[in-house]
Length: 114
Length: 111
Image (tube, rainbow over all chains, first blue to last red; front, side, top):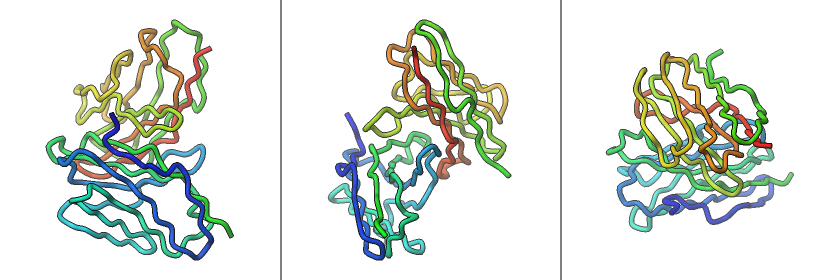
């Protein structure tokens, strides 16, 4: 049973517009969340994280929002650029596991059209 | 330039044979991990190790084995007991309670 779900396998947006990628989780013990970006034939690279004591974390064009009551997080990319086209994974972990066990979603493939 | 090296990138083996996937890191990270990715699914944890000579099973450890004799190295053996070994395998490392750094993966195909 997947504890972290990304229900949209793909997303297509126009260059310059906002991209919103969504992620839902079921385990209320999760308190640390990350987004990774993956290009073809490469490993995932860390993008941005958020802990459960916050509801928003911003890094340049990337912002992650956390809604604990809904067990939902989202990644906003503004403005979207063609180089952002990749697969995005969300992941979650719990402090009780010393953040050693991460549960990953199945990924959303983002296509930013020029 | 620090990073994680997985080799080989593609690996083909006959059914019933054990195969070992290599993972080396020069980031001086204590923790190392092995994940498996299947089409349409997220990464699933096979094994992880927080220190040398110690490792823990993840969610799908059956049919796999690991060793951690050196801080830099965390090889994964896919044994003949693994019923469906064809997959993309990713190795990662991290400092304690920090985001993980990933290698570029090994695609294993069983003929």
